[in-house]
Image (cartoon, rainbow, N blue to C red; front, top):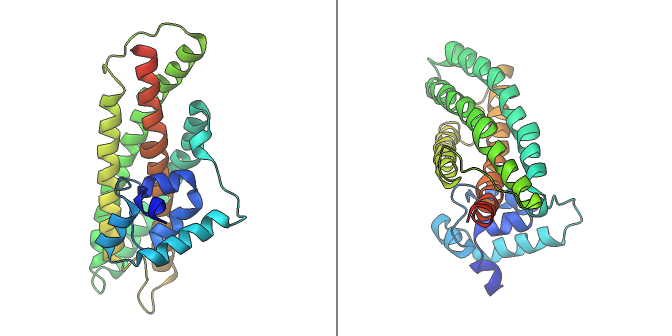
Length: 240
């Protein structure tokens, strides 16, 4: 038990992705803020550590399928992130723009929080659109080149950005910004709980925002806590 509580939240989710929903249930950040120990996270959120530990251990014993992301080869992990998570963002941003604008227009007078939700979502949507392109056009191709250079024991020209650490830190800052915006949206919407008598579009928007945030948390976790550390380690080995 002592060993488990000393692990960071990110380590726990990296070892077993099935624990992610447990941390989410207690409002514990496992992506951008995953560097804190489980014990410290519980103290900050006033969560009973013993109860949380039991739930985490039960998740480890579960027969539910567990994706072993931490042992995937980097090119495969990158392709997964792009084909699953980037594609999800690109497909759902237009729908959520439409929902948020419509709900703000129709219900903004009686539910002023949805006007702010609209503004916040449009902001994060613009940020994410640019963010994904930077990863797909600059950082991810470089990481794949590092893998090839390592496998072939060949030389690789240093990139214009100097080191992967520079774009990685930028991506992590942008992850932090997106996470903070969604935290504010969750707060404004009472954790995506539609008000009594809400219309179908109102309910659909809240459900889709909740789904979007969950996907974003996993997306950020895969990059911040698995892909980026491995890429930086590989770069050090290849470039010296």
